[in-house]
Image 1: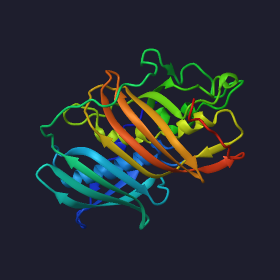
Image 2: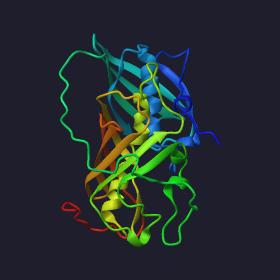
Image 3: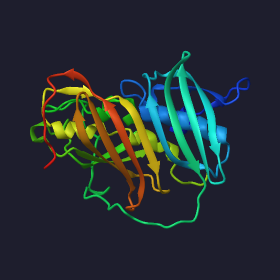
Length: 300
């Protein structure tokens, strides 16, 4: 079966009767239990970019606030250009389902400008692409000592290739799965490459892969009867560079979880050690099973 194309699945169509309004229909290719918040964010950014209609204005940063779960199917996007300057345009894109607001994105798009180039972050100490462990391939859906493989369970991962750069493969090696630091690293690429008109990695396609921070919390908790899922309250991303590489490293870190919420961050690098983007997220922790543990992973 051919992999889904995120660009095609997040197409928007201008409504000829309402200024700034777009129609779209999100399929189930990008689901966990429901569509990934990052995929929904990409959809809203497509509408924002369509309203600006200036390819030279490219995404710099965006923040999404998720008001309610977004199901597959039709939705409406209303876009307001808040400011259009010489270098930067700022836009608000609101997504509604059945007449109710479900999420809103505020984004800045900018033209390339002259300025200093300063490398402040160092490439992390993780497995390189060649050494990282593939998540699927010649393995059954469930393992004798482990759990179901999430990369075979969820539709979104069927559209991606993924290799573990940092952290245990808990579903395969449950006997060796131990609690670790609140960090997790994965190399990921789209099976259907996502490119912009210039041939660079499509900046709007970063959002679904940035929206993968809860795994770092799972690693910090370690083996436990506690099960949770972590819908996004908000998701922010900053894009700082372009790349034409397909494989990107997404290294996440959860600084704190408390009182039913958690905050995370993620760095994005390409396989030539270029820093590409950075994201942050607030999560709503929903207990599925077990008792929420008390964990200090700060010195691991």
